[in-house]
Length: 383
Ligand code: ATP
Ligand code: MG
Ligand code: MG
Image (cartoon, rainbow, N blue to C red; front, side, top):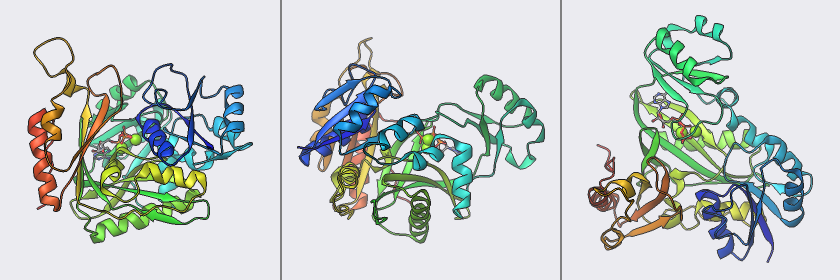
């Protein structure tokens, strides 16, 4: 079989690997760690740093195409790979997702609104912050995820101490918006520029980490507008692969782009059980030059994230395996575990997809599992 490559060996690399192998491809993973969710499964593993030129050269030589499971891979590595193989997404498309300043400016340039923000490159930038950005959220511009590198700040005093804690520049200060809800769009775009979009999902975060994804398959005007905006962003990036754009919907109904992820996204995991082609299959199809898959929703769905906390929530000191028997005896449930050996609080260990004939039923089953595993957030039917 032909080889496809992936940079990074976390759960996204693992699920990509599973999709690729089920379609007859072999997978080469490049990652510095000996043990990882993907290395266990991949057909071969180059254990090297992401900027190791020799390793990248070998990968490029062996693979039909290479993708990345995280946005913070060095742009130069993508460029080196692209001299000898297809890289999807390419350096140009990944660049803006690596830095919140570039990202917001790029999204605005596509005519899509973002939260009011200011860039902070040095201490003196704090003096000129507009009053309208308070209360706000200070975010490091690079390398933040799952709400890490963010501080809620009520005033100038607090932004100063948050900036001192951040110890990184650049940062952005964003106005804290009054959210009605959050949604995200996952789409795939092929090398001919053709796009397919998945049903929009509605997301609940807890402590800055995605907790619940809801998909009822109803295309509201807001969902339609979000799909259109995400499509414009993908076209503007000349994007090849799977892209996620996260949005805020404000109390007044307006739509604001939060950020994008140049890869399959946690909020698209529901596609594994609820759509004809999953987001990972779509990634394989684009890389292999195959036709884009069908994004049709087969059943309403809810996804529940499983963090390490679920393993640690016991009287004893030892992590304990949750009661999967009880979970899997519920109708329409699928368990996805990432094979991580060490459960830590806040660490993504797996997820559960629930599908049902109606959205209300999916929410009902999801909440039985929320109770069973004592998860932090309930699924909700919007009023
Ligand atoms: P991810 O893991 O999604 O990459 P991240 O660390 O990049 O997370 P953000 O997506 O910027 O973080 O923010 C995490 C969550 O914090 C958002 O999903 C939202 O719930 C909340 N949040 C972020 N920015 C704002 C804002 N400007 N106003 C209100 N809430 C916000
Ligand atoms: Mg992010
Ligand atoms: Mg986010």
